[in-house]
Image 1 (cartoon, rainbow, N blue to C red):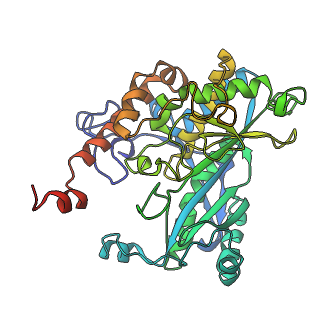
Image 2: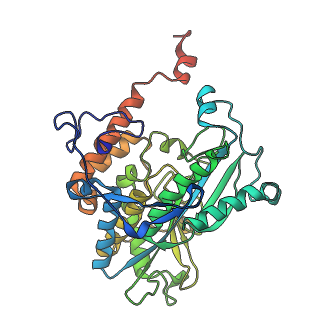
Image 3: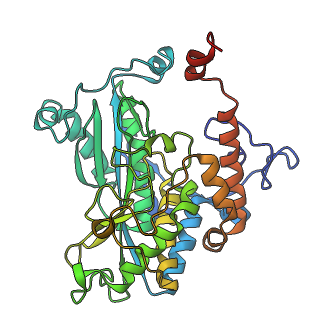
Length: 395
């Protein structure tokens, strides 16, 4: 059934894997032993992730990432990744947000207090309990602080092999919500919950190692230490970004975040330590040099977002795709392409993408695009507040 309904438990009526014609049969899952951890606030209950197996594995986001990882292994590479999330925290509960119709919500803290010593110190007990929980359930954080906006927090998960990084990113989002709700609070990872505030990102930091465990992005003989492989990796990410975007920005709301003047990507640009680009190259040491994939928002599925960020890079290396000049050199000119501005457009491009089918499999692309098209249709059929306020009397 899970493969046949959406995030609001509404049934898809036109997907091939399951549905009314087949009676919504079971899809088998297999617990993943290495993901076991104890939940400290549930009397050390043992918790495991599981993944779909059999035919359903071809639609499973975790299996899609494993497919991309195997591609990298065939090229002699392994990936290190770390997710970085922004999220809003509210003095609300699931009951109060519904009673208020998601309006006039009370933030955890007021005002724009990014990187604030005051906010961190005043609420140090809360933050220390949260950090302790993350350690106990094996989701260590490399950074954690307030961000700009009322009640906004940012957490950078410690880098790990990319499959573990995706597992931990998924669990981080889930257990952040649980931690908050157990304290009569609510966390949201919507890409943009309010037009009054910036959106919420889910950036992905990536580097590659060869079989000798060396960072192949680092070459001291090259300008800014950017190796040929790193350049091609960026080239692949840049070239495929517009056609793979639906897997990274998977909701209607994802595209509300991607607007000018908010440090959110609006094109497939790349730059050197440049936060206005979709791809931020971070020059550094042999262990720290990496690329930050900034297109992903907080609402993205970590497995799919990392599959795109990594798979497009591998495709770039394999085909020696040269990127455009960085926006540090050329500004937003020469070869920079705008990104899709809606889920419908992004889904249509993904469905037509031959490379997407090569990287992730046609069965997955067909299934995923159908679900995104259904999401777009549901939104298109709504009459929202803006339409009522604009047209009710005057038209």
